[in-house]
Length: 288
Image (cartoon, rainbow, N blue to C red; front, top):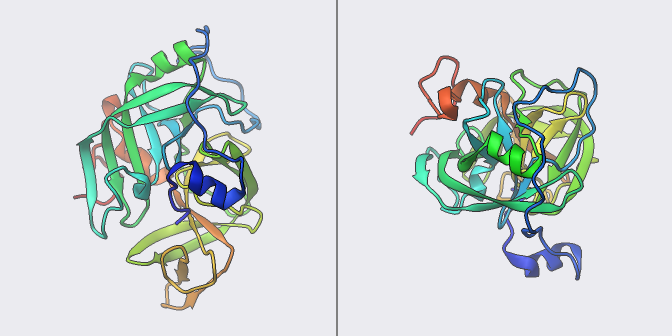
């Protein structure tokens, strides 16, 4: 995994002295940008940090489905292995677990503009995928009105190999640009196995603390995956050294290559009021 970090000490060990994780800053002045304001026309959108968040140990982003309403409680997307309750075991699914976790909201330049608070972990797992969705105490409209920041929209279709992407880490206030190299039938790491994972081209050399970062399609500005792991030292199928397993059981190890979990398959599970409904038509996320 692009493992979660604890404190500036580990940050210094990873990237050298003087580097610290993102921290909350004073709220920005009110703006008139509205979450329900008309969206920009078609065409490429510059990828910025706007809408990303820094967790205490990971990265994340404020996200919405195409059907989310401005008055819905906002959702924060991160990894299952970033949850404050610890790594869920294989087969474990967390639903509607109370949480008071806080997130530092970033603006386009990567500046912390305020603190968002969770009311619960709406969904979290490391089975088949590696994701968590936190429900916030703020609505999309409230966030837009106070900070002038809109949520990132989740793509509804399977991503395509060759797509130019950006991994935007709110924890490090750093971006990584590369392409989707392909898709992995099964990605195995330690006790966990993930399905149809995204493999990056080598340019995206993500590190600890980038876990949970949104993977953004450069052309559309939509979230197509959530960053979660990479093979650090060439070992086979161990923690921090995931291996690829194809349809025939053949194992491939790609040292230095990093991966993400697709998010289009989450969208059918987000129902009215942004409530997670695992029984909705088309929802294939693991159930408790």
